[in-house]
Image (cartoon, rainbow, N blue to C red; front, top):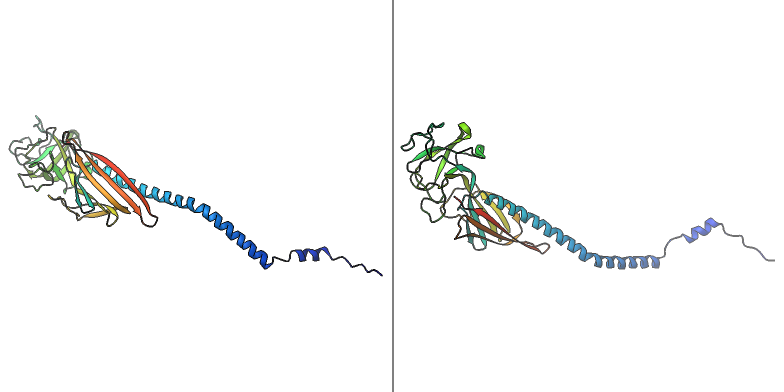
Length: 304
């Protein structure tokens, strides 16, 4: 007699089929996944590294451009013929006197002066700038830009020709009868849109052919130090005959990762009305071995 086996329920069959993976199957899957991941990593490593390098170069370039723009803006306010450069080893110092404002002064007496602020010999009307005597005051031709920012620690400078010119170098020490700068007392508003400039009694030796004057806030230095890997701006220190290295003042950090630098100042010996400051900065990031070299030239006016 033949006995027929009763069929197994479908649910029981399904449970036996979905029971799980064997150890061999798991090891095989893991090995294949590792091989695929390693292959993908090999192909992605170079593009990822290139992306990181590009990002780092862009960051360094952006920091350098910001520093260059700051230097350019400052140099455009430099007193004519006041830029000077000094190097001590690999450290470069760029210094200049920063003008706060400037204009033209009245050189002849007015027939009916609106402002009488002194009565020195040769300037009885009191509104003209006289270089042959110890003057203390003059009126401007038109208003002064940025007049509200002028303080009594600023200097009046007239006809600055720079180093080597007697009584025409704003860095030189001054007395009441030597030099071309004098400490500002006040600058006030006057009639007709003019301003009244008062300063410490001083006999200026030279007069500006175009009756120009500048008001100087003080010296500013940029210090590039590859040893410290920094580019810094230093201000709020005293004017000195010899260029300080380093100056002692208020320091602001402009850039880091400086590996090398060169700063030069060239003044056209034929046309001394302009000068060119050339700045080369080399940046290097030790963590990613990224190096960037940038070069910038800034033209400065030397018309006193």
